[in-house]
Image 1 (tube, rainbow, N blue to C red):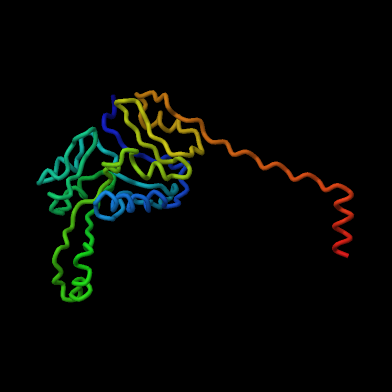
Image 2 (cartoon, rainbow, N blue to C red):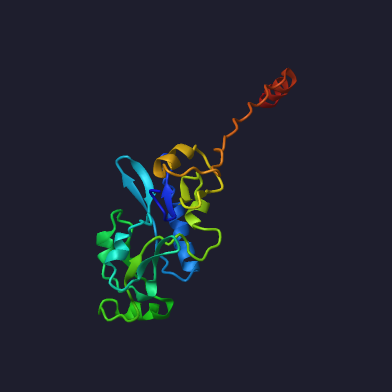
Length: 218
């Protein structure tokens, strides 16, 4: 099997770059007690626009270079323990997809201090750590970005179980895309794409309705 870790990936042909995934990523990170920072980034390329996020590499170059073990392979993915991350940036250099960044935020308890001493550069309580997709660990329904995608472009793949998690609306055929991404796995739960029903034409007005309209205009 070519892939053993579960991961989230985007079909670029179905992505409309609405940024809904990025917004819900920040919201659910905050709800889970994490830094309210985006774990994916909607990129603009010559070939189009699409979200980029951690691919949960089986060999995990980021985990291999992490000096504290904050990044580690567990539960069929690459986990990040934010509490022991020292923000050394080695993982950002090792990541082949540019899907890890270093960021920080001011806790609510020191906002007033930040405003008073920002120019002096003597702010306490701020720690820079690695930020990466953890597939919304702790949310039973799975990655929030997959659930909120309005076209179904985002999908979570579990190649070992041969299962996928899809969004509520699928506006394209995902079978060829999944086959290209994980060619050794056959998925049975791929939903049929949603077909938009054409609007029914309005009935032509009767001669009586046309006559009444002309009289009112006159």
